[in-house]
Image (cartoon, rainbow, N blue to C red; front, side):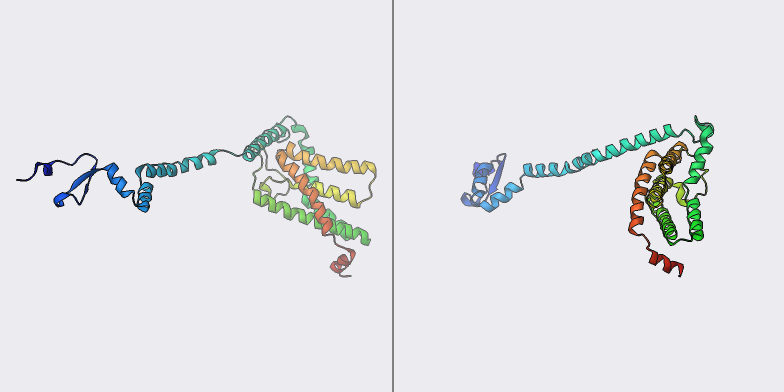
Length: 271
């Protein structure tokens, strides 16, 4: 008759272990079992690393990764906030200063004068005038100055076209596209080509022409009025004109670096 002890159910939390008396399974509690397994340090470390608590901690840490990254991405930087604020102020101020954008505007009566200033800063009159004066000039010094002025005008067209194509900023919404002799790149606003040309030509005239004091004041006044007319007509935003003045100022330095000497001029003219 079998012993009653063999029919006893396993205690909760127990584990079967071989080697009991008479080849039977004996049950041992978890603390005692872990004490036996703890005698092997490698096995103990492996089991500790695979514990449910550690796995839950690792999964929770990995799961919290994307929200933190999203939080960082959604947090705007200080530079981005500053640029957005500057853009908002620029658009607001440009719209307020567009006083001649149409005949019905507050300063619509002076729109023809602003358009005359627009033509005075256009590239075609400057290129045609410099080429004609170069053709009619008899002195080598005058030809040298006019040839380098043509070089500066062509550089201005190329550089402004490149920047406009890269930036692709649209013209203000209140602008009327009734400009004189426009090209495909002129649908973009940044920077103002009239402002770059006025700044470069103004520096060029002041540096290479002997002008009386009243004429020098007129040159400064013309440069400022050309830039102002671009905003009053609604052609450009304020930052387009300011950057155009800065760009034209440094374009003159580039012309001085690439200055064509009289020897180069003679070779070009075939003398």
